[in-house]
Figure 1 (tube, helix red, strand yellow):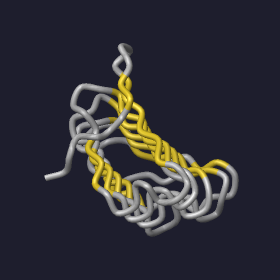
Figure 2 (cartoon, helix red, strand yellow):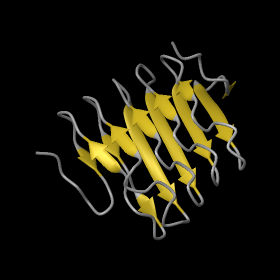
Figure 3 (tube, one colour):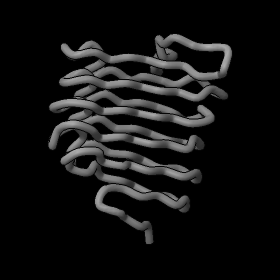
Figure 4 (cartoon, helix red, strand yellow):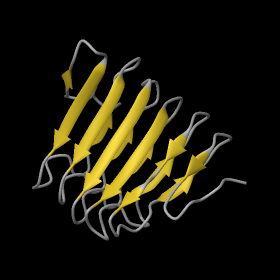
Length: 135
């Protein structure tokens, strides 16, 4: 069973976890608090092989910024609306990162020249880079 996300929470209902350069979140399972807006910020090499569970968060925002920031990461949206942002490097997310969408909206915009992650859609509208539509 994953531990609750070690994050900074604000009275606005937002929790932020910053995973910095050097792999301090690599291979971990991070669980976002239920009923909160969850934001995970991953820098270069910081979230490789990480599983992020946003199962009952209101919204989940995952920012992957830099080389191999979220390489091999899995983001499980559950009932949350999710956004996985891949930025500033071709391999920020890459094809081996996976965004598992639930019944709410799910997006994976790429900024700069990032390769898109794999997006597994349920019945919700979802889009990736390049634009992807679910069957």
